[in-house]
Amino acid sequence: MRKMNRRPFAGAVLVACAILALAAGGCGGGAKVTHIGENMADFEKTVTQADKPVLVDFFKEGCVACAFLESTIDQLAEEYEGRAVIASFKTYTFLFGTPCKDINRRCNIGLVPTVILFVDGKEKKRWIAEYNGDIYRKFLDEVVPPAPAAQPKAEEPAAKEAEAAPAPAKA
Image (cartoon, helix red, strand yellow):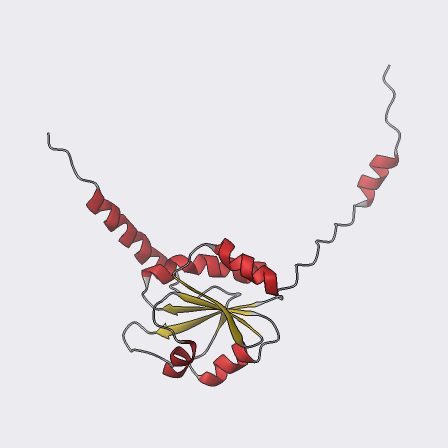
């Protein structure tokens, strides 16, 4: 019996997973991710005039690599909510070209996914095709104030009474 080469199937599985990821929501971030509009005024308002550091994911609709980065961007948006702006900008649309050439030109976007960290409206760090969220966290933690410590939950009165009551004596 002839041995079957499984490598062609690995590529097909990868493509199928990417298609499912795109169908489930595509690239461009979740609910806490700020979506930058298609004009320079939106970009200026969101990035240049921001009073917090801004991490922008420049992505292309239909890009498999961008789809893999999407969950990392969503996670960062939740972790840094209120302390930094995690944003996305669709640099190219699948069928219709570039929505805002001025933003692409200004940020020198060539390859996607590109992620840029802006501090005080200026580029501090750039990554191209980096999927490790810890690398983004390292640089965000340098420029973002730490998260406030979690407040301990108030104990319920029944729990306090149970602690105050003497333990029953054993016979």
